[in-house]
Length: 183
Image (cartoon, rainbow, N blue to C red; front, side):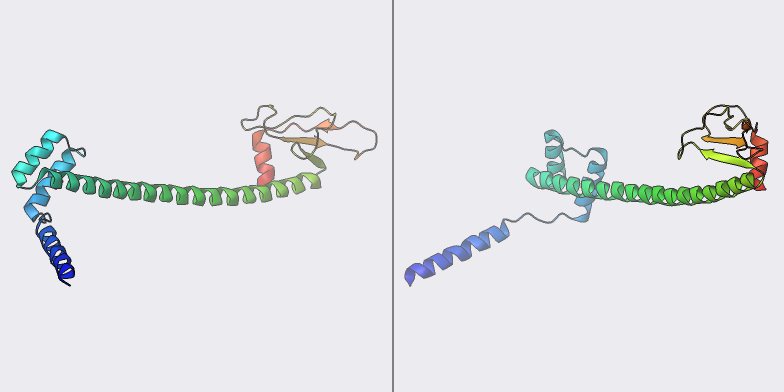
């Protein structure tokens, strides 16, 4: 039993000594000074560590640990802000994508109405994306009224609807096409 009491007493003494050897908490003025120092320089140089330790009356190791912890909190906060900014950009991009998809559907509807209007007046519309261009002479319409191949649709008038006569090309400028869409 004597051995047990000696070990217990030894353990109590080591616990008591370690409890009193713990670093003191920093007071408000010390924290304020460390915060101010941190705003100017996020990295603690050895000379600066010694200066701060002397100025604050704490061990240099405590200054180093405070800086290390503060830098970790600062990085986490910075990452959180960056993540929030990226999340906001993502939400904005997704909203814009949904808006553009809605615009595409609306334009497809307008295009279908224009096709139906052109079909009603005897004009057939060939979609370059869905079919190969027919072997007729055609004029592609682009913005600005020039005949470049960039618009993607050909407008051909077939007056006799397949009675042996050649198809005639409908020359369309931008205003005419716009008026047909609004029609």
